[in-house]
Amino acid sequence: TTTYMSAEQIKGEKYSTKSDIWAASLTFAECLFGYYPFRSGTTFIELLMQITNHQKFEFPPDTSAECRDFIMCGLQQRPEDRPDATDLLQHPFLRNNATTMEDLAQFLATVNVFPEETVKIQPSSHSRTI
Image 1 (cartoon, helix red, strand yellow):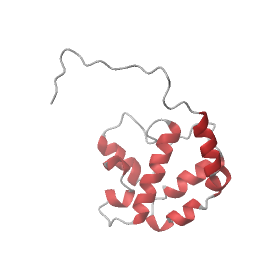
Image 2: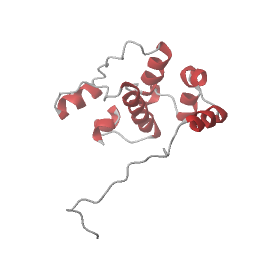
Image 3: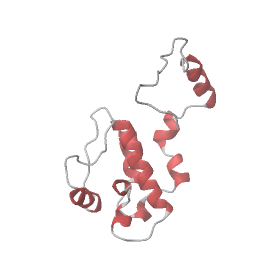
Image 4: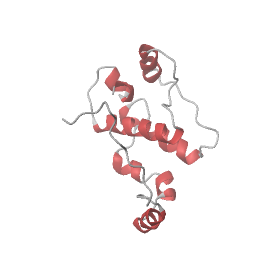
């Protein structure tokens, strides 16, 4: 959506893979924070102005310096200042917090994905078969 467009795209400049780095960084921040990082309660035009004027957003207080740097690397105003995907994957935040496939498999083994007692959803009297 337009709220994830990079500053250069908003300004009408050419799309590049660096635009995807912007969107991925913004999406990562939103997943981490639990909310869209730029100020909420603003109009769409104000939001676009925040992005193109490179206004910073507040990080939750417990966000590590490495994590802040990881996010802000991808949100550099000028696309040429953003890392490419290969460089971003080598960022200390990812290297120091990477999970191996074995760790992931162990975690997933502990998650009860399909509990024995599941709630069966009954069709309502208003539903119909299509």
